[in-house]
Length: 233
Image 1 (spheres, rainbow, N blue to C red):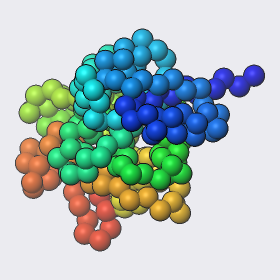
Image 2: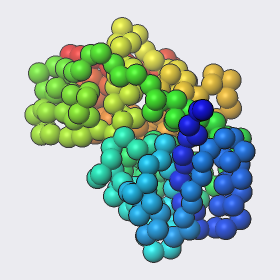
Image 3: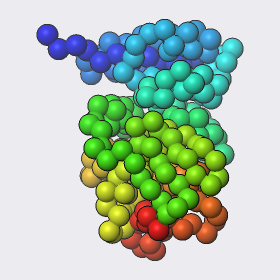
């Protein structure tokens, strides 16, 4: 018998929560839910879920704080944030705390299901056999431990950030387009009509971590009209 994937939905709006429960039960998930922040955090930390759908605006404790607490305990837990806040600052905050993706309200249920399936595919993917990425003499990136040591000090990465670095490193000889990253790293179908700034925000976050001068990148460069390249020197 196939074990059902488990999903936790943390959403305070009753109609949205009930609708999401129905949708994911229909798609074969085992679903648990919470309507307040503290309850959602407790379930997230004590249960075993394949993915957590986490609203930002919650009573008692907001989604950003919950995401941060989850990441302190488990860097690998897949998390998608649901948010009515669509400014870059709010999106950057959620992704910086380790969310794998965000979906802005109001959202298409079909698009949300695609996002969930894509994140789960990536979470279940196999690890790269190469355990280290070396960028010049300045930074040694440990893929397995999601960390790096360099001239700027130690830093850590989310799983998604590391997947981006791995993919760019594996294809270092050429530029990788934004669409290719969405397809190969996030797992979105090539013909899926998805609007997301997730790639751009992740690239900006990575530059702040790995570049001596993020505004003048030396390693994670933009190739105009073609995409991004990761250079080792």
